[in-house]
Amino acid sequence: MKYLDEYRDPALARQLLAELRRTATEPWRIMEVCGGQTHTLVRQGIDELLPAGIRMIHGPGCPVCVTPLETLDRAMAIAARPGVIFTSFGDMLRVPGSDTDLLSLRAHGADVRVIYTPMDAVRIARDRPDREVVFLAVGFETTAPANAMAVLHAARLGLPNFSLLVSHVLVPPAMTALLNDPDCEVQAFLAAGHVCAVMGWREYEPIAADHRVPIVVTGFEPLDLLEGILMATAQLEHGRCEVENQYLRAVRRSGNTEAQDAIARVFRVTDRAWRGIGTLPDSGLELADAYQRFDAADRFDVGGLRPAEDPECIAGAILTGARLPTDCTAYGTRCTPRHPLGAPMVSTEGTCAAFHAAGRTKEVSRP
Image (cartoon, rainbow, N blue to C red; front, side, top):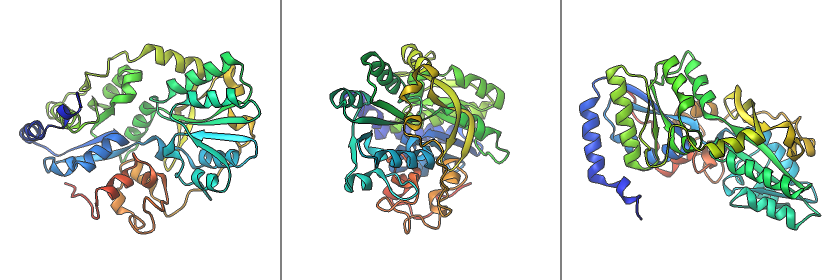
């Protein structure tokens, strides 16, 4: 496939690894923010091929993993109601809530449907005016524009039976929260290329300057990640703390301004709970006042649910990079992709699922 094989060339990968070994003279700790990047690193064994002094810390950039338990329980409560068509992307169906998941509810008769775009939910609401249609709107800045456009389209159509259960989170506040933790070991970041394709990288510049950390906007293929790690390492070695863009083929500094305008029109910034991490200030999106009528949590009066996490799951420590999946006593035994305790094992972007799929049974050596 054009523009895919080129970024998986083993000869170029070996050249980048050789250059990285020449560049790195000290141990460095670099966090890749995105779960998709984590899967590439682990599946391809890149984290084990790096020079001994460079350690990758796997960050909280899996949107499924950080969706709080309360949102999932609200989703179950709404989906179980008669007269509701509950819609979601497929990766959310097996994420466990307190007692069940959406796939199990569907097996017991709930009308839970997998869709591929939020516009599908709008069309269902238009075609079924006798039913309440709810879309589970989760994710980072990447999915927010499409969800905003769905709300705008539903408003134009005057649909009274369409709503969103919103749990959007924002990347820069999470990075700042990690860096403000006195135990943080992160010395540089690989920023998620798809988020920056929407938002650009201007909002990362104050983070790099204030916290003295290099940030490299990076793609998702093996060569993208190797080049991003090399660029971050070169900055660390030379004492630079800048935002650089490895993902030139997809990202501009200003991002996609039309997508940003749609987000700003439909949503507003709010404090948001992150599963396993806690509530971070100004780290999420909620519907603005003008579109509050599309808020499913209000419509179905489920906003008060406050469940407790399974105490055996160490998802928070894994999502912040403090622990590896193999540090968890339940990993691979009581917690597997078929029977997950927490979202990092069930999600296709979760660190636990990445380790399990790659057959990791022991901790990667740390300098």
